[in-house]
Amino acid sequence: MKKRTYINKWNLLIAFCVLAFASCSDVLDKKDLSAINEEDVWVDEDLTESFLNEIYDDNLDGWPINASAASDDASGQGGAIYGELTANSNGIYAGLYRNIKDINLFLEKVGEGELVSKTLFMAQAHFFRAKAYFDLVSTYGGVPLVLKVPVQGVDELEVPRNKTSECITQILSDLDMAINGLPNAYDDSSSDYGRITKGAAMAFKAKVLITYASEQFDPNQSAGRWQAAYDAISAARANLESSGKGLHSDFENLWFDETNSNPEAIIIRRFNVDRTQNRDAGCRPFVVGTNGESWDKPTISILEAFPMKDGKAITDGTSSYAYDSEAFWLNRDPRFEATIAHNGDLWDLNDPEPQKTSALHWAFQESRIEAQSDSRISPSALYCRKAVNVSVAGGNPTLLNTTDWIEMRFTEVLLFVAEAANEIGNMSEAYDALIAIRQRAGLDVGGDNMYGLQTGMDQDQMRDAIFLERRIELAYEGKRSADLRRRRMYNTINGTHRKGYVIVRTAAFDALDPSDEILDDRIALETGVLNGSIDIDDPTVYNTYFDTQETSLERDGNTTEDGTPINYQDNYYFFDLPQSAIDKNPSLVQTEGWPGGSFNPLD
Image (cartoon, rainbow, N blue to C red; front, side, top):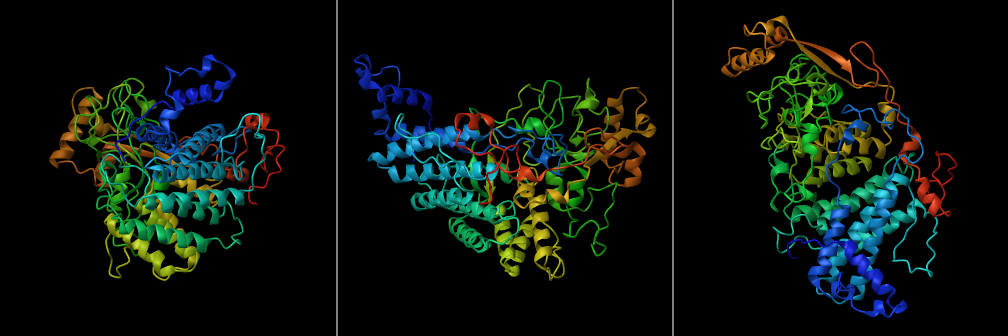
């Protein structure tokens, strides 16, 4: 396929509408010179591909903005986490049906034609229709299946919700059609990087089956769906590995390998100078003139979830490393430093002075030096550094970035293998997958070659180990909150409070330089740290210059009050249909658990 180009599909649709009603007017019988003619689109490979590219743009996921705020991994005070959602709480319904309408149109028109790339074009469209319906079903349960373009005045548009099981069957059918028509790789690997491959569709099919086997859709785990999920993820893994996919050698920098040779990237949304994202701005420290800086601020809970460098928990007395709650960054899983930035960390951001005066990063109160500095410091004194491009210059209003989003990477495929294998009793394969991930992470192998994993785990223990690995490996990729829904695990954090740190300077800090300026004291400390005369990795030395207290990150919480506890509600596992959709389609029945609802999303 050729390098992606885009046309405005709305211009196309206007042209289609004109042509559809051409018989009503002699004027409309004339060729429409102000829009692209429908007949020209579906007989032209490039124009058809341009329409397909718009489908990609509309349906691929982007960077998950603050998704972790709906979990125990980051600060955030939304209505979902406190159990305060009301009707119309999730509004993706109408937008996804608009996307499905466009996909149906594409499938109909391409299916009627004789384009050289017909099979390949339709396979990609079938993938995206499956994805759109999966997004709907995982949010609401069963929804109306609309699989063709309605003919006005002929087709009945007021259709009821299909059963969830019927929707899953259709999703799998679309994915099978996609798999049958997609290549393992594209001929033009550079310009087609990011297009859906056979392996990507197979991996997504496995994700659908794993989700359908999970407690969200099968609370009692009585439906026996895990074998199908295991078979699908095993087939996806085999295809991907045969196509050169696998674990990237560099956990920290795999995000910046934007070539077809990146073995980790399975499903990707591309960004470039014409299509940028602002995720970096939301995660980086505040710089005057820059928006954002409020997303994915880590909690002590996720900080403590990372193991020590030998892969053992911070509470495990058999670890070769002693955990120090004050110098918590020492001797940790290497993924810790690649994921979380802390006060005094080496994080060489390309920020202007005085925010940055060395490669060291600071998160103590008044460390940003500018107006509103305290209110703009991370509420937990911790920052997400995963996939943040340090070379992008801070201090401009947009701070836009072009780093691609990897929606599914090969590590998650291995984690799905481990999860499905464990659920069908294949413990050895679950161990093998976790060991491969921990080996890539750089953990100590250990005398038993287990990289810190407990030997002889039963199914429940292995399940816990897998979700711990998902939590730390996929941190701030939008997976933790999705996992809590998928496996109905919010009950494990309900009633708890997320915590962070408040760090203030001491009198010894203020005495580092004779001037009265905090900046001068900070630069003096930086000089000492970088020349080795001040060792802030020594807790005693660190505490000479900083006083640290735990603080609640919850609403009304502070250093002395816990505030509002997490209180995720059971009915949030399937949301309510928007009232606007019900008003337009009286055949729709509201979801159980919501006012007036009787539709069972588990059927």
